[in-house]
Length: 207
Figure 1: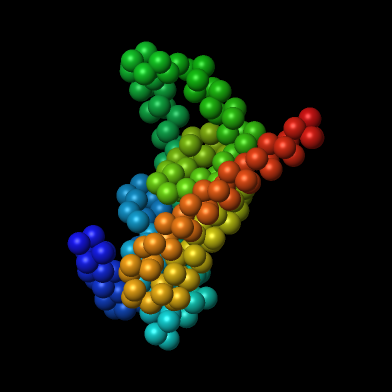
Figure 2: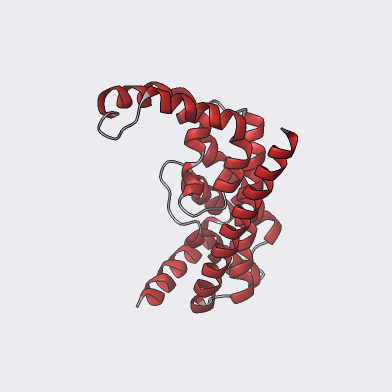
């Protein structure tokens, strides 16, 4: 049942992408990566199918997906940068005691992002759900914009290439795509943990 629903959704987006072309991919990934997140799979996997059918270019699809992800991430970043601090402080003052959150916790989180923002942003882009939301705390902590864009682009580029590749390799066989997507997601989580461990070890050596 779920596979049939997924098949219908993919077919729907294949038709949309076919009509809007690369612009549709760019707009879709911009929305997906911003404050209104929805699964990027339903955009990039159908695009990969169209690449397999020689109706689209892998390289241009990749660039459209990557830059769409970046624009969406920038939207969240600037929301956090310009509006996040004041709003969060008001919420903490009003409701912080209920959730055992204080301004000291807020300051600690800011300092953490100042020290480890790059690795946190990169790893966050590899983790489902987190990938769309990681831009908000980066903006809130006023992370360096160039570094934010670089590490967001690296993480988003990996995810974009994987999803296009799945559509290209398996075509419209959604059962195979779903099973392989689960395996790849698990592998990315393991990769994220290994990168984090390596980062901690290197940091300790520097100290």
